[in-house]
Image (cartoon, rainbow, N blue to C red; front, side, top):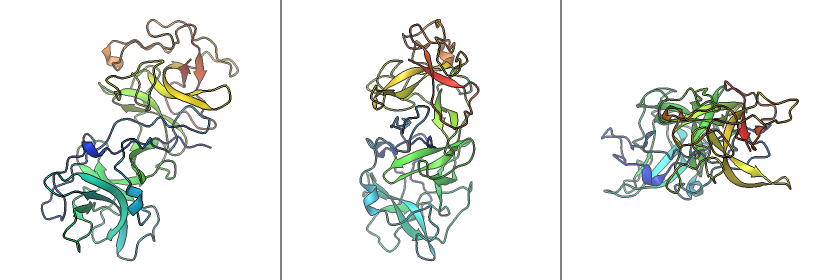
Length: 335
């Protein structure tokens, strides 16, 4: 069974460096949830299931050839010598710019190893014997990464994951932070409804997301603009959250069984399916020819989400195989 994992990309240009090198200053690297990641979720290509994502990232905005320097695996217990741990290592350029130049996995000393959910920092000098570089790591145990807590702005040690290779547990997905090497942190899905766009806070939209155990989830993200705006139904897209509220990014299925470009398609309810054969879900009150959304705003912006497709579009079920659908209403896509 395919794992529906997503991956976000850590964008070099958005990371503000407020302190690095040794840990005498107590400052952090500034890589928090608002300045340290791109909100776009890779639309990818999967093995035939169209309800979620595969574990690949688009690689368009990663930090460079970080994998070239990776010397260990944070998910392998004996990956480093005794007294050391395998950690995410951030390599910054010289002051005053302190530009992030590389991200890799490396063996660092394990004298500070905080546990899961413990407050942490990423200003630990990763190479104390080398006073000429500007290389830092966190102070979490191996297998954890110092990142913003799910429910607070403080940084805490969170479980590392990598695409579909690490099971974060039921109801969780891998919030990817970097593409090369690929890693992220385990994140809890909000359980929102992508069809009727409920369950998210103002400014966010609900999208279908794959859990690391294969289940189909609903998670909230701020719609990601591209080329000056957020694409609407029928328009080309590059990321799962790169479509207007009420729609998701899906690769087009070609007659030969392959996949074409990804387009935004409105979510719809599959309640009208009969023996697996899609039927017309009816006329929507508003929207484009392939769905019931008409503007770029989330559900509180005045858009009415009916769960219906505008004729002649029909509601096609999302192929989730044997995965569990853990959203309030089983979603389809208008096409």
